[in-house]
Image 1 (cartoon, rainbow, N blue to C red):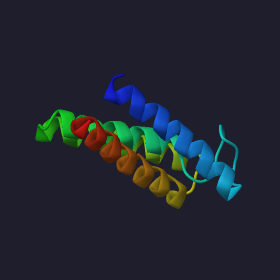
Image 2: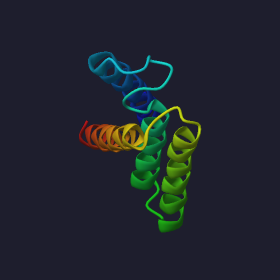
Image 3: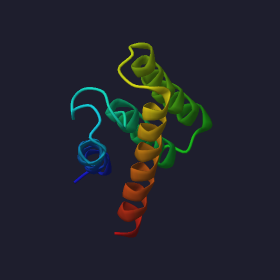
Image 4: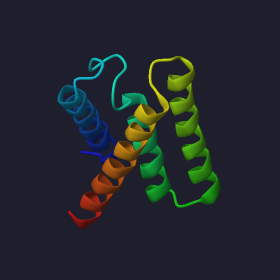
Amino acid sequence: MHVTLICIVLVLIAVVVVKALTSTGTPLKGGMPSGHAALAFAMATLVTLIEAGLTVSTLSYLMAVLVAQSRIEGKIHTFWETVAGAILGVLIGLLVYQLKIVG
């Protein structure tokens, strides 16, 4: 299975579990953490690790920041919910990449 698909599935599972544990929002609307931010930052992290170019990495993270910003501006998430999603996404992206390299 490709590292990207594994990462997407793990991020989605983690977001649903954390939302259930924190009892905030619903799995598909609002709450802690932002699933959109988590996915965007997980993908930006994988792009950075797979494609080591500075331009590609910068653009990937810029797009992830824009996704997070759109969730805040749409009043779907707070700043801290998107930060939590971003941290979760980066951590899962790093974990999946490291496990794929080792495995």
